[in-house]
Every structure is written in C-alpha cells, then in structure tokens.
Image 1: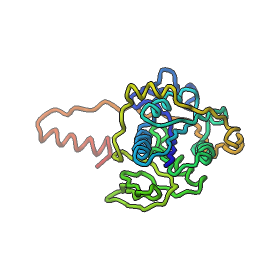
Image 2: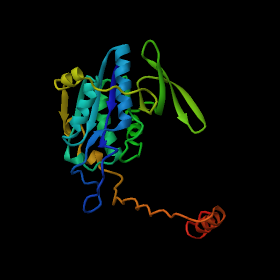
Image 3: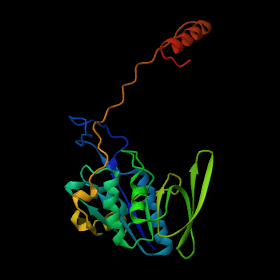
Length: 260
C-alpha cells in the first residue's frame, strides 16, 4: 500500500505571534515552527498501515527551506521519504493554489491513500485536502476518527464524529482522508529513527517540475489584513454581602455587559 501524507509546517501553539509591519502576515522572527499537530495523526496512521500492509510512505509539503525540519520529524517517526516543493510563486498561495500544487505531485506518486490533518492550526480553513481530492477526482472523507482497512488493503470502513453522533462510511481506495484527534496516538521519534531520517531522501521540486506555472496557481482569495484579538479587559470584583453583591452583578450584566 502506497500512502502519501500532505503535511504543513505551522507555528508552535505556544509561540508568541506578532504581526509584521503591514499586518499582512506574521513576523516569523523568533517563532518556532513545527509539524501541524493534526498532521501528526496522519503521519502515524500512514506508518501503522505500512507496518501492516507494506508498501511505501511519502510526506509531501510546500514552503521555504525551514519546512524540511518538520519533514525530518515525519521521516524520523517512520515515513520513508519526502517531496519538498519550493517556489516563489507559492509564497502567498491560497488554499486552492497550494492544493493544486500538492495534487500535481501526488498524482505522480501512485498513491492508494492520501492523508492529511483535518485542518492546519494557523489558517484553520480545512480546505486544502478537500481541494486536493477534487483535483485528483477522488472520494474524500473528512475528520476521520477511526479506520478499519480491509484485509486486501483496497477498501476501508471509517467513522467521523459529528454533532450528536457518528457517521460511518465504506470507501474504495484510492481516496483522500483527513485525520482527527483520537484516530491514533502519534509516536515519538526514536534516536535510531532520527539518525536514519538524516539519510532519507527528500526530493526538491519547483513549481515547473510539477507541470504547473505561476498562472495555474494564482490565488483566488487574498487576505488583506490580519487583526489581533482585542486584549481582555480586567475583571471586576464585587464585594459585599451575597444579596447585595448578587444585585450589583445582575445590574452590571444587564447595563454594561448587556448579556441579560
């Protein structure tokens, strides 16, 4: 079974994010970047399936040179090799453009299953993998929380959590799926795995090598500006006897907070 994982590098959830001077994006100086947390579940699932069915696993990502660090993490966990797409035309690509570039690479990898995280924690759009599936004309299932593969590796039964219940699907491969927390428990990279990862292949590609041009991935959505969240105002402490304090609280909720 050949499995491709589409991975993104994102800022660490604990990183302090500062906008750049024109508020068109974040200032990357001093920011720690890591593998998108939801993509860790996709990487783990790919490795587990390979351990059971054999085949090859490939991690594909796009971005500047720094994304290779996250790719090496996936390789250290057990992914076999990687494909890195770097091109100036992709620097400000929207989800549609990024997906088109990813799909162009995946199309040539003869994948039985294409996995990704359910969303990236920076943009939170959850749009790239759906677009990849559309470009490849493959069935797609989002937010997979459990997966049972048929003995022949050609079909799968998967479930996804929805509000108030669960949906169960039978799907014939190849297919695109995104992975949710609870699907598995991502492993830590072992020391031998880290050492092996240094020797594993990461193929470098530019946009032309995918068969696409800058015009092919021209963004359909432009983000004009990022706005920071308003700082939370200091809370108020209401003192006095319980009955008086309750009356004051009700008045504040009605007249200031306007929630009652």
